[in-house]
Length: 381
Ligand code: SOE
Image 1 (cartoon, rainbow, N blue to C red):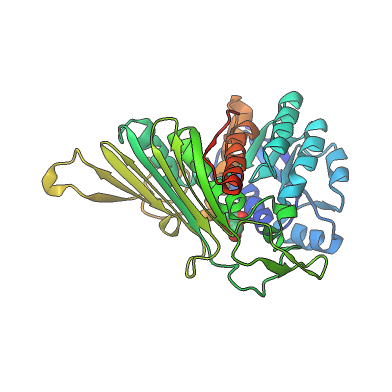
Image 2: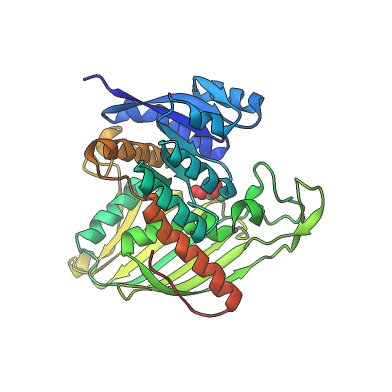
């Protein structure tokens, strides 16, 4: 059966632009879908960079103004892969232009912006999703299946960490290409919006809503040269954040994220302890899920290390033969596959903008709590 084209307009060309482009390139090779992705246009302010990126990944054309991209009739879906402070404006315009939207995480700078974005896509009736890719690492999806099957029983604890070490040097400037993550005006926040956002999204998906929290943030390096102004300026992002909280199911939350954990590059881990069983996962060993079941015969009871590569594991039947692992980049392929499936089935690809608002509201609560040094109740979306 001939497949319908799904014409992609990519806005941005950084690390995530590459990760998403790779997904559009690969998805139809592995998944049998009703739509075939077409890399129609890459958009960046700098024409030379846009051209280089387009040639590298196979985009047919370039644009240097995202508004022009949105005017094009031959674009079906736009991918917003630019700093967080541009997500809202582009998403509102894209929705008004009737384009489907795949937006990089976090959804927005804050919940107020996020709400406008949810309203816009729902009013326009356009398909939308936010790239919280870790849900779709097969071992993490397997964790979801095990929890939904009730294997863990009542959940007592949810613990997550996302540790990095790339901003320890005081010589590192803030702002501009690559370093906008250190500039609160562009990023909205530091590790909370960049890293904890992933941990929160996974947690909400696996363990349900959170009701309250208390957070502590720190900015270890108070001033850095700003790449855009050339001046030494105050750093207003959170370099590190730790929070504890409560889930609506009664379990306790314990989360930590930092860019000052020397030796750790991208150590995302979580552990969930239930009455009957526990699971834990580690991004550095992403194709394994650790599972302990108290109901096992005591003689052989212990942690199982499940190599999540078998044909009946989530997504794995689409890839190689059992036992052969896939990587980080495949989580993005899975998200595109699910997005396209959603276009045919009518079941939206989660997290939608509305789903991602749950995370956004928690991010706001984290910053509020850290500032006020008070427990904060998390409002309902
Ligand atoms: C930051 O270094 C970063 O690239 C995040 O922005 C991504 O979302 C995360 O998945 C990996 O780390």
